[in-house]
Length: 176
Length: 176
Length: 176
Image (cartoon, rainbow over all chains, first blue to last red):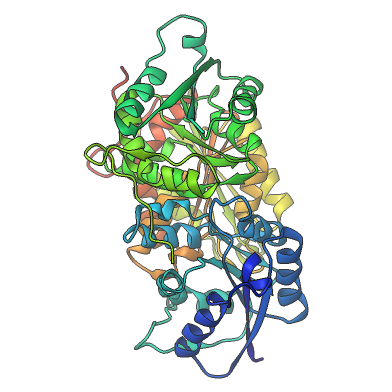
């Protein structure tokens, strides 16, 4: 079972070609450094529209079989930002600890970190995690949550994989 | 566009005149020190009844055009406390980072901070934030979240305003 | 009014007799050390099925009159883990501070603490709190949240009780 990771860029302007998507490639570059062993990236680029974000997440989870789906963009308070709502709609179970930790980490850098509405949740055996839009903040957040992700996917009967311990060490508690 | 701030005191006893509202005036005094430039306070006093709290929040957001609406009272576990539920009902999008930070700050003072059910969310272009009932706790919470509020309102296309940096400095990340 | 505490073990295997329930007895032993004065434990053992978890929680709250109900198990990302969803379904009001604090405490020990989906909430005058499955993690979480629980139950007009201050001191803020 090869690991598939969906990468969803949510941006009106990038999806219209007004500017280049930076978040998606930044995530893919970070994951290429972090993940050991074979994996494939399944990228998508959608505007800030709930039905289109939801459709992309559902396709990546149900059709593409992505064990992990990360989004970038659409998590702030701007009127068009609806990525967390789309995420919650398609997930059957939520993972509040991801948003809490990412905000706590970002709060060490900027007091406006509380404006991030990032969430995470589970659809079937896919873990969906909202990341921020800016590449620097993406790296901070991935560094914070990635150590727990291989074990999470394993608990959901997904593919077993590991990360480069010199870059971002995965953690697995000893099972009794 | 003048900044309007709604201040909703939620209290059975204060609304019946059994005792004087202390939370509302404490918030208004704090904001008078913090906010630079013209703004108007739009105070409301309602009992701990969901329909009345919801009606006050809707009126302040939709009719009075308040960019910020703060509540005081009704966020604990007492049987009559329903301010967070009323807030969630009228908001289209939630802001979980506000409650997380306010509880984390209060937790430095008292272990019972986890009993606070404070939340925050967005209705149209209004930010609604639940504050505690006691004036001392109100100041602690405002000091924690206020630095992010001017930027939040700006992101929602609301009025641009600033705070007194010697009292509580507003923060705006540099946009790329 | 004697204090009743419901203890719900959620586990497919323990409920089938495949192995012995360890979480429930660990909670009861911890509470026996912590709680001062008379109280009765009302234990239940159910599989990881939402309707059965919900039925147990409702019975303990509405029929048995438990002021506090703690669960153990079913809060991770495994496909069968649905204890937080069952808890949210039966609660009228949620207490987000409990999950936040328990995850923050566990995060000091293991980075996989963010995978815990533990929550807490109120049904009538009962406080329901999800604890982890492993006895060591149960003790860490109880130690973190117990100081606030006697005051919480008092605010809900439940029985007044205290804890052994040399083991885990309860806290009550001075009311004005």
